[in-house]
Length: 251
Image 1: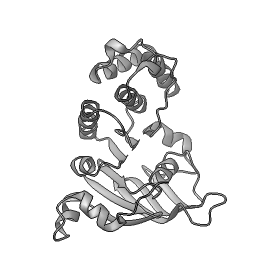
Image 2: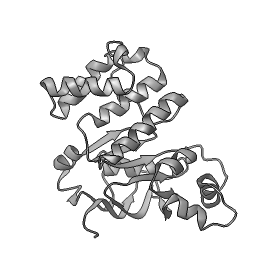
Image 3: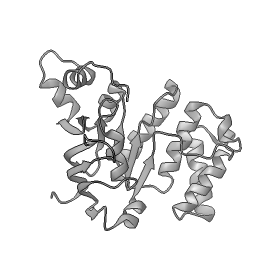
Image 4: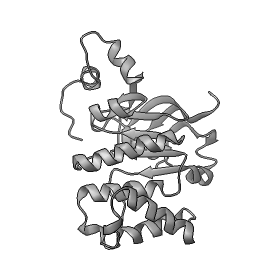
């Protein structure tokens, strides 16, 4: 395997109990350090399954995963110290305030005292949430919840950040704040693995992408190079539709 990679996946297979078809069908990927890597695909293509295996939430049926050279099966605890996860669903306690949620989550990462207070305050201020910090999460708008959800994943300054649909269903202002922050975070040598259905956003944000469909990687590379290699196609969305088709995916 290539040395120095942030993530190395080899021949990864996932078959869910009761299913005949694999959710992941022998996929292999290498993500170098410092990338914003987009994993794109239709509904049910295997994006979330891949992210969940990389984060240690799911076990693979077969194949191997290495995070910063550490085997995911042998070094789960060490890997958890270097990664951050922002799930598609809001992973916050609705009856706690934003500050209470973040202090609790920060303590789970081993942060505490002045360090944790300052880190929570710094993040709330950056994302425009300081004045709402004492309000219960259930009173927040969708965009505000997404911003707190992101903060929860980056409090401990992870070296690798996994983002599963981080801007789904939110207002333009919240999306811009999140995207700007991710770009800034990446300049500080944080590798970002990102899934999204927003092709324009992925084209602007990602340095490299892979498109997955039916549990297989069907193409990967730099967005501009992908577009330039296909005469008559002018953006990532047109390439995506060419490769995955226009049939609706409702699962």
